[in-house]
Image (cartoon, rainbow, N blue to C red; front, side, top):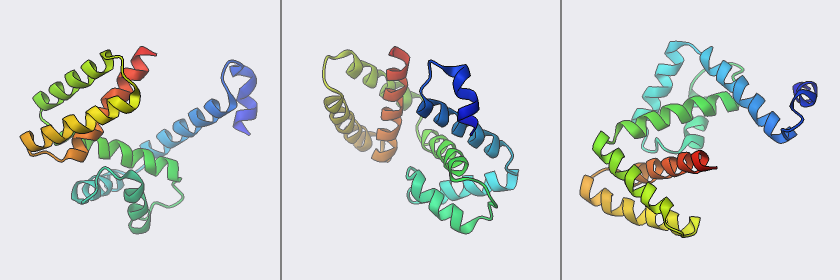
Length: 155
């Protein structure tokens, strides 16, 4: 219904893009309305989880354990995703982050396919995992997130 009302004002935007944007705004408002206790519970759950990078599984666990009322799944997903990223990024030092970003930037400058870039990121993170004693999943997640940011920046 909201898409129908807004579509005439955004004639250069597809309905699908408009719908996704509306969902993100509603989710963002829902997250902001959550109590500090709920947010703290989510942070603690992510920090203590053996799989802090698996946002879908975390959402399932939290939906079953927390009383979130009528909070929609998109809002919960956004909150858990944000906290998961914060947790993962906090596991890396500033120097490690800089080194990963530099290597990802170098890969972007090569004229290779996105599949080859992803393969090289996996290889690079395997090496860094051994060198730094940091979870390889965290390294890959950070590197691929940076790759996504670079792709958005250059589009």
